[in-house]
Image (cartoon, rainbow, N blue to C red; front, side):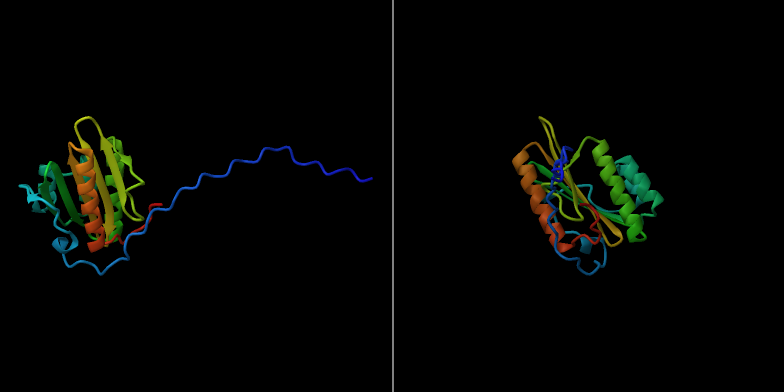
Length: 191
C-alpha cells in the first residue's frame, strides 16, 4: 500500500490583523482661489492673533512647531492664513499654508505629522480620513485634537484644544467635517 501522506506539522501563521480602511472624504473639488476661500470659519467668537501671515510672522508668532516652520521656509511658503475662535471653553484654529506646489505642501504636511507625534500626540485612526491624518492627546487639564492634509499647493491644519474632552472633541469633529466638506484633500496617501 502507498504510504499515507503526512500532514504538515508546521504551524500555520496566524491571519494578519485586518485594519479597517479609513473612511473616504468627499471627492476633490476645484482649487480654491485663495487661502480664505480654502477655509471655513470656525464656530465661536473670533480671537485676536488670526489673519494673514507671511514666513516672518509665522517665525515670530511661533504658531506651529519649529521643525514645521523650518520645513515651510525650506519649501518656499509664500503666505498663510489663520482663522481662530473660542467656542465656549474650546480654542479652535484653522491654518492654510500656501506653498509653490503640491510636492512642497506634502513635505510640510509630513513634517507637521512628525512634529505632532514627537510632541506626544498619537495618530487617531478613529477620527482620521483617507488623506486626513488626525492626532490627539489628553491629560488631566487639556484635550488636544489636530488634523493635517494637503489641498493642492496648500497645507490645511485644524487645531482644537480645551479642558473638556466631550466639548473639545465635538468642536473638533464639527470643524473637521465642515472643512473637509468645503475643501476635501487632494492627496490621499495615508492608509
